[in-house]
Amino acid sequence: MKIQYKIFVVFALMLSFTACKKDFLEVDPIGKVAVQDFYQTDEDATRAIMASYDILQWMNARDWNSAYLVKTFPSDESNVAGGSDGDQPPYQELGVYTYGASNAPITAVWESNYFGIYRSNMVINYVPGATDLQKQIIGEAKFLRAYYYFEIAAMFGNGPLILGELSPSEYSQPFVDATALYIQAVADLEAAIEVLPKKSEYDPQDVFRATQGAAQALLGKVHLYAGNWSASAAAFEAVIATQEYALQADFSSLFLQESEFGVESLLEASWVTTMGYDWGTFQWGGNRAMENNITWQLCGPRGEAFEAGETGLVGGWGFNLPKQGLYDVFAAEADTTRKPATLLSLEDLRALDGDWTDENAWGWDGCIRVKYSTRMDETSDADGAVPELNYGTNLRLLRYADVLLMAAEAHHKNGNDGTAATYLNMVRTRANLGGFTGDIMSAIKKERQMELAFEGVRFLDLVRWGDAATVLGPLGFQAGKHNLYPIPADEMRNNSYAVQNAGY
Image (cartoon, rainbow, N blue to C red; front, side, top):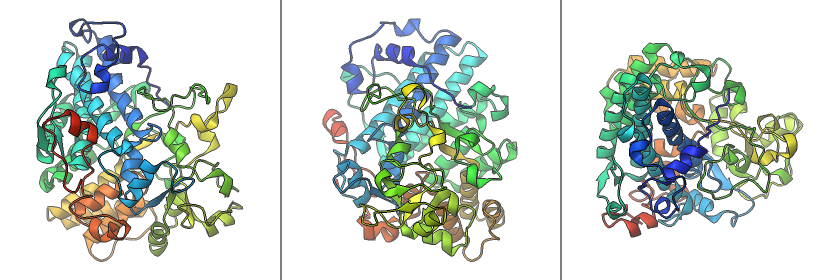
């Protein structure tokens, strides 16, 4: 089921309130509504929480400023690619570590997360909690605020901790470190767990909303990143014990629309194919979330060099081309289940009667991506819609295989290798591989590399493991600098308390 967020009225209302970001402050009010007169009913609260969810769409499919790509391009999974080295320079910078504080996609990630924090704060502080639904909605807002603060902590290492509405004179806010941000996220998630429904308790039209299991899983992830192994393992055990989630048997369809919000899903950013955008109606660079996922069009194999054959794919704009090294990892493990659902070599492509006709193309390294690629049956050309502008494929933000692998890591770090091996081997079994051999932490790392390829987690994994300098050093990564993204130049100019990360 596809969920389309209809929040345009809410968005207009939100613009009339004092925001914590400068460009919101510069927008003329639309439909002035006093804060004390909004948020009071279940309907108001529902509209407001939809505005908070909306940021998940916006931040990950914000034309040339996608948070998903900001987390993907610095990894060893893919080349930025595109048409040439001059095609979208801010993205190209991410692939070779030449980005700085003025990089537009990095700035957009910072901005998007703080927009999400602002909207969540408004729900938490103004919804009265007078009904069971309102209490649930406050819990959803706390979950989302924790998600957005986790992203800031993991990517930037520090930032303002804002829990209320700011006046223009309060724009400058002290920075706190990642530990303080994680502590706030933990508090929010623990509160959310108490009031959020289980996945099975939601009506079908609400499957996109935060669940108790999603909050438990994010709590485990926050503790994992913070190095709290025992607490992390306990949170993941709580998810597993619910028996609300399982590994989908068929990995080949796991990332297709038919599997959205399925048995393996804990949290997704959701889009639709039905908006009918064309070249005149698509809002490039706008501050309103689009209902399609333009990122997938950016990342489809470049049309002029690609012949689809029997792959089911169609041409895109050529960014995010896989690296041969990732293909080699799958091949060395004899992983014939996940490999063809993740990427294809030129030989694989030709075996499916397809082809790649320009081996000198910028960023080409012998492979095309299958996971989250461009498929005609996942977009629309109805009533004059432009297929390139109407992709509806969801981004899986939390899924059960990730939970099992994080649980394995937490248990290993906590000295419980027996349980760790059990969860690791559950994921390997789904991939038709035998039990792991050798060092268990090395096996967990390799399994995450294959299972979660192109899901925006590899770079942050390498950084938190302390492996980034070794793995990414040849690509330009500098230890002590690229462990964190730069604090955006706009923040440095506008916040007198802002402290730039080392090396920038």
